[in-house]
Structures are given as structure tokens and as C-alpha cells.
Length: 303
Image (cartoon, rainbow, N blue to C red; front, side, top):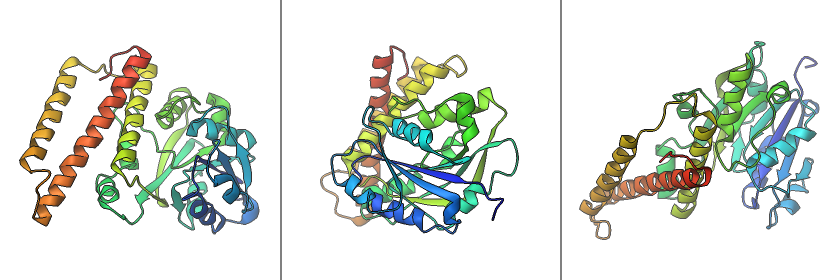
């Protein structure tokens, strides 16, 4: 027990009155010695009852009210963290009981700077959540196989604190893409590597409405642009014909929806197919709109 590393668990939250309680309780119910980890919850200036709920629990409560991004909130948590290992989880996640033990226990090799665990969806309550689960949303498999360099989703990630001391913190003003930026800086500027541990599991509550899913995809599209701007000298340029191909895909998807008679589906199987095609379109359009917004704001071409 004395050889176990001290772990600081950092949870950013904004207007999370419906989700933060479950997250905190799962983190307080870990099979890791309680005197070997601390729980830091960073309130990103919530306007609901989030603060009241957090204060009911034996956690360190911090407010980040200057910049409203999850990365700014995480940075504030890092500044207060005492652990040699920093564990990151999102407020809409539930950690398995062995999450800290498995994640922190994976830092056996000196060159392991980051550990990524699995992110699974909670039991779906509607067709939007079911779609996002089937599409492997937030899957570590996707980002850990990125065509530039691998990176983990920060909803389930462990880092050595020394990594931040060597390369700096998250890009605090970014709305998305900060996960990739941090991991890429670590791999480009240090000898530390990323390790994938499938036994470190969290359950994630996916977006449950079309509007919230669309807004999430827009943010991801903006994040893609930010990453491209910062690393474009090291990454292949996006060519005009790729944009034309995306436009063709968009038109093709709309055509499929029309053929499925969006408003007049009677058969259950046809309804499922229609819903999937419709949500495919929403996800695709959200991503591309985000990339367009990011391109305009950053004065680059990445659409």
C-alpha cells in the first residue's frame, strides 16, 4: 500500500446538477485507498445547483469563472493537484469501482506518460443515445489510431503530473481538440508514450437530443480546425477535392433520407433506417459547420 502513487482526480463541470452527483459518488466508492487519492471538482461558473450538490461531498471544490471551457477548468484543477498521477474524467461519466487502481497501476514503465481507458455508453434511453453508442462516439479506438499521432479522450485519461511540468497545460481557450494537442505535445517534445488499458472503464452519458448532439459536433469540428492550424506543417494538407467529396456525401445522404420518406415511415425497420440516416446527416453537417466556423475564425482553409 505504501508504494501506491498518490492520485489527483480532476472533474470539470458546468451546469451539471443532473449528472455530477453520480460521478462524484462513483469516485468516492473506489477500491483504491482513500488516503491515496484526492477528488478535485472544478466548477466552470455553473448557473444551476451544481455548486450546492458538490459541497455535500468530501471533495475539493474549486471555481474557474474567468474562462468557460473544460480545459480551463482542468488547468485550474491541475494547479491545486497534489498527486504524482492526475486522473481526468468528465462530469457526465461514472467510473467503475477499480478505475483508479487499474489506471494508476499502469504507470510501471518509466516512459509511460499517459494511460487511456475505455469509454462506454450508459444504457440508452432514446434513439439518439442508442445511435451514439452504436457509432462508438468517444471511442478511444478512433483517436488512438489518428493518422497524425495517437491521442486519448480526456473523459478517461491518466497523466503523470511531470508531463504538465515539462510541456505546459491544456490550451485553455480551446472549446475542443485540447485532448489531442496535449498528447501530441507530449509525444513530440518528450520520450513519454501513451498506453491503452481496456480494464480502466468509465460509463459516459451521451447526448440525448438532436440539438445537443449537433452542438457537440460543431465543437468537434472547430477543434479539428484548431489542431490543423497548430500542426499543419506536420500534417497533410486538406485538398479541395476532399471538400467536394464531402459535399457529394452530404447530397447522397439527403437523397437517402428523401427516398426513405422521412415523414411517412410505417414499418419499424424502415423507421430505424430513417432515424440512422437522419442522425448521420445531423452529425456530418454539425462537424462540417464547425470546421467552417473554425476556418473563418482562424483564417485557414480546412473545410
